[in-house]
Length: 109
Length: 115
Image (cartoon, rainbow over all chains, first blue to last red):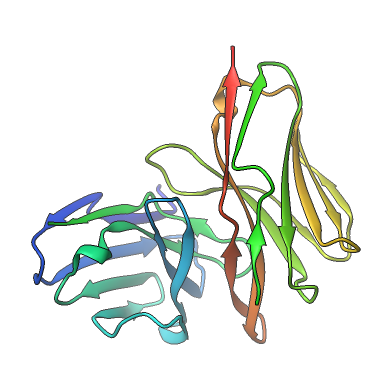
């Protein structure tokens, strides 16, 4: 009965690889988000989707491509991974009050 | 530019004492504010929110105060418990269009509760 779930929890990969993170919410929200949390715990919005349509793209490199097959899912695909992509990525859903997933810790070696 | 920041990066309190975590925001047009608690290895968890037409809101053991004059937000935790140890974030909603927007987060305050 998890509200916002993400897979995988941990992701370790080499530079240059392509990886995906999946997110699902069962709260019935129309809006979903991806946030990045750096090593200093700073949380920053990356993308926002409303009913499968892109609303916000906060100057994220185009190596990052979100995909929303339906309004309950928002996946994040990252091409040509770089060292600086190492972070914890959080999915969230909601309009004002946002509910966050458990996070995916991405480590790029 | 816009920013939401916290006055203190760390706060250490004795179990049973009250805790106050402060936050300053710069966008006077913001009309929605929210506090999150993040425990180690977990996602941010909603604590309490407040709209700009209010100056105080209470929850269970928590109170949020909003002072729009000085653009200041605070979270008060009564009778702090060891389980309250976490990083606390304030955030303000930046409206993109209509009701859609994203949250701008402060840097976080780490609360440590001493038994």
